[in-house]
Structure formats: structure tokens, C-alpha cells
Image (cartoon, rainbow, N blue to C red; front, side, top):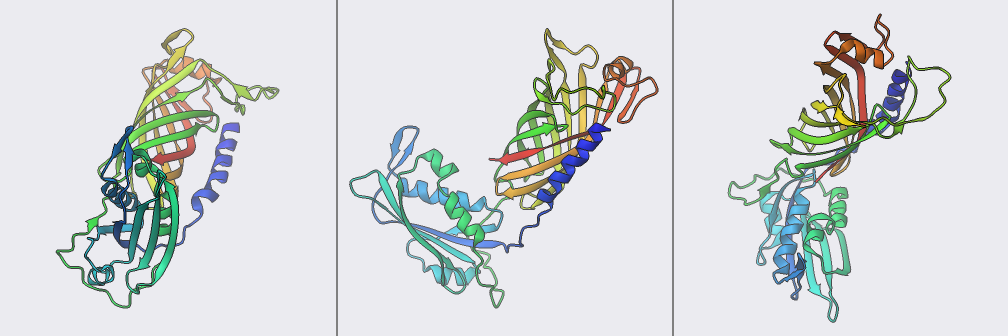
Length: 351
């Protein structure tokens, strides 16, 4: 019953976070342009790259198409009239940067302006001097402030729906822009775990490798533990490396993404190093709900059951303190053991 209590407690704590709705944001079609007013460089793997303009422009486009709101993007040529191009193909925003080297330093000056594509009004404008970026910074952190500004902007609604020319060379944003996954969870509200993997097919399917560990965790007791037990931490010589296969029921642009995952793992004793003779193999089937906190970072909650095949079900039940009459949360036979509920919650990062 104590496990059930803490499962309910975890749900109660997590649901306000998962249930907080974001204001609806309209999709955006974006035009970009980077104007190099003087030469500058980008550092890549310790070497100076001369075509700093092209690296800056392409990384800007890559950063903006990762945003959930951006559904199409095109880079303007130097000779195009931005407002005419926006009006011709119903673009919502024009993001223009003017970049120059700061004389006598390794810094660059970026003057940015974001305009409403339908009215031409300036929605955001700023100038800042920053260190000349490295290749890694351009692909990871350099555009965070600009991305945040674009996410918050609400352009004026169009009074008429304009047809979009079939020849319009906009980049239609693909769904799978952050295929790599890193996540940290708390198994049964007790034991930290860590997983990494990759998504496929427009981020609908995913595969992960990781580890459940029982070296250190918080002890809450259980329905079969001694009521006088006072210790609050537990350490067991057991790890469970595993492989996860899963599928989302909603696309990557959704704030809420339900999914189903199946984990296959082995149980390894560390003292001495060997497979657990009681239950060497196991699997979990979990139904999850993921809620995006900010682009690229989500909270998740999973609930399901664990199944141990090819084991000594009676000995495994006895090791968990289950009586021969069975108990809440367990079912077993001579060669199998089923444990429920199983739950995890944590944070998932998409890269």
C-alpha cells in the first residue's frame, strides 16, 4: 500500500505540471536574411573558417526551423524586397541580421530586426556585440535569445488568405528536427536512471539504451515491510541495462504526446558479477505522457507493469516478501512473475 500511496503522490505532484496549458500560438512562415557589412570568421575545430557569413546564415535557418511554431522558412537573397516577398507568399515574419566585425577585437556586432510580414511594422529590434562564435556554439546555443523572441512574437492577423505560389522555394519544416534523446528518470519514485537514444519516422518511433540502477535510492517501505523500519535509503548490488522500443501517438509539434514503450532488460548482480539467478531477464510495458516545457525539453510520466519470464516465480515472490496466497501488485507462477504498478517520471531532452 505504501508503494501505491507514493505512486498516487507522484501523479498528484506531476499532473499540475503536465496539465498547465500553453496559450495557443499560430504557426509562422518566416523569411530570413543575413547581411555581412564586413568580413568575420567562425572557429571550427580550432581552425578559423573564412566563410563566416554562410555559417552564420545557415545556422540561423537551422535554429529557426527547430521551433515548433515555424512551419516554413526561406532565406531572402540580397536583392529581394523583403516586404514584397512576404506579401507574395503570405510570410508572417521577416528576420534580418546585419553583421560586422568589431574593429580591433575578436567580437562581432549583430543588429537584428524582426518585422511583421503583413504590415512591415518592427516587432523587435536590438544590437549587441558578442564574441565571434565557434561552430559548436552556432549549432547549440548562439541563437537561443533570437529563438525565444520569435516564439513570443504574435504578428498581426492577415485580413485575407493569400494563395501561396507553387514555385515558392520555402523550406517546409520537417517534423523530426531533434532526433537524439537523453533522459533522466526516477524509477518507482526511488531509483534514478539514465537513458539515451534516437527517434525515427518523423519522431514517431524511438529506440533507447540505458540503465536502471539500484545502488542508491530512497526507501519508502512497502506493504510487506516491517512497520518499525526507520531507514530511508536503500542500496542493492543490482543493475538492469536495457533496450527500449516505443511509439508516440502525437507528432513532435504537440505540447502533449502520449506514447507506449516496451523495455527488455537483463538483471546483473555486481557482487559477485553475474546474472541474477532468480530472474535473469525482464521487461516492462509502460504507457507514458510527455509534456513539453520549452522547445527541446519535456517532462514525462509513465505507468505500467514489469514481467519476468524464465524465472523461479515462487522464490522471486518470497524474496519480495509476498505470501503464498499472493499479494497486491503481484501475480506469479512456477516460471514467471508479474509486478504492478510500475512507474517512472523525469525529464527528457531532445537534441
